[in-house]
Image (cartoon, rainbow, N blue to C red; front, top):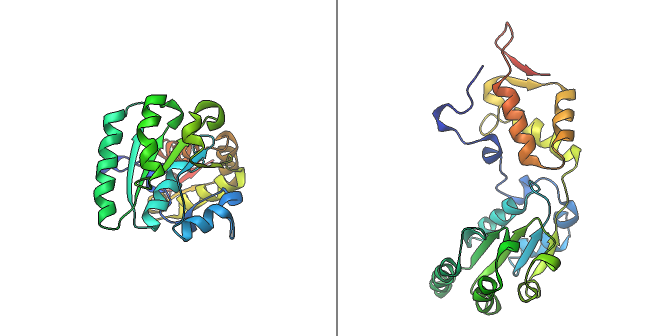
Length: 229
């Protein structure tokens, strides 16, 4: 068996993370040709937003793509571990960048976990355009977040990925020789791909982890090939 983590290689889910809109998987109701969110990203007109949806559906990945595609600075905080002092530092840095013509996106993971005081600390920066806020949450923001933040953001609801979306991503990971499993002589039966996609429950990260674990624990055949069944 091949050790996929030799040389401290990043997990498959991280290696296969899309870098552009063209590589992004799923959410066609938001990112299909002509859809509002896609048009806003391509025109660099996306204002502060909240991405609401289940785990593993691409919320954080899309926020990173947005920052990269617009040449903006990208700062990521987690609402569980960050406080008002962290927000003030982000705002101060964003003000400096703004003086040189660069925008700043702040991605706040688990944004529903912020208190009212934390939310209030960022409102002026959102209103003045100092930062472009993107909140990522698995909870309905209308019920779990302070109304002041929600009223200043556009809410986009992400859906669970379909089994077809996940199957496509897994097959791409098996073939990709640079970031995926293609360089390791690993293949998988169609039935195995369908099973992993179904059991992932719409979470692509879970599916990648399952595929990687299967590859790590599958013994090679007489020809040295690993086939996941």
